[in-house]
Length: 117
Image (cartoon, rainbow, N blue to C red):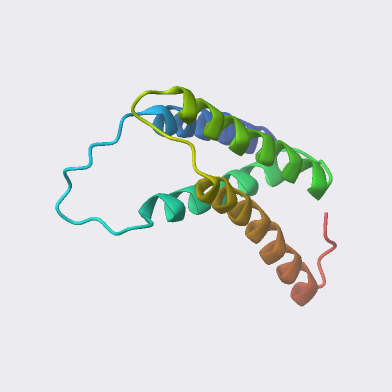
């Protein structure tokens, strides 16, 4: 049952994230720091990696491949929108978020003696 819940959460988060990555951003905010979008991309892909890892029993490299393709697709989509632009920095932040999740999970497994899967 838990795996089915994570599959639903992954699907829901992919839909919401795709919508938000396609949405026009208003830049008239009073408080804004320079690389907020990179932090958002990192966090989103960290969470997507978590959901993906718990939703499906794939090898780590396959999870990373799928998330890399999704990140590339998001950047391509943003490049086609007149009010958004693609960014290599965002793509790197996507990959860093996904890889960070799996590295932290690997460290957790090493410390607890849990098998890495």
